[in-house]
Image 1 (spheres, one colour):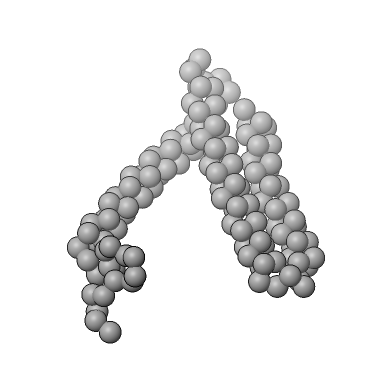
Image 2: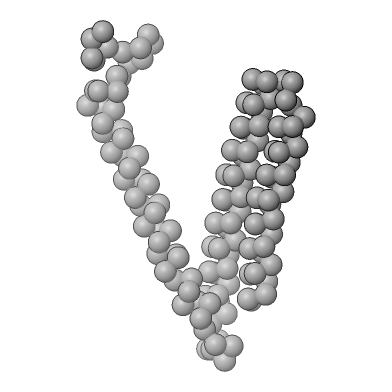
Amino acid sequence: MVPFQCEPGCTVSGNHLLAAIHKEEVMKKWTMVLVALAAVMLMAPSAFAQDSAAAAGGKGLMAIAAGFGMALAAFGGALGQGRIASAACEGMARNPGAAAAIRAAMILGLVFVETLALFTLVIIFVKI
């Protein structure tokens, strides 16, 4: 087998320069997302650490940090639920005889993930 051979219908192999450039662009995007996430996470503790006798703008930062926190919780919950449902559907397609057990485990997993998002919402309401 030739090391630079492409699959049928593939225009760029994994060893090609364009594939390396694409991977580098994806990594740069992920780096920017992680830097933005780190900046938000660094601002959140200072917003929640404010006194109740803070200045008039004190509640504004807390509300912004709470909004970002709930957005992250909702994103993580949705991502987790999607993966749970995907894996359950794949498992039921591979083994239809175990569909009932897989469905029960899927519902239990979905309940746990949704509970985490609801706990985040409750904590935000208590804090604000």
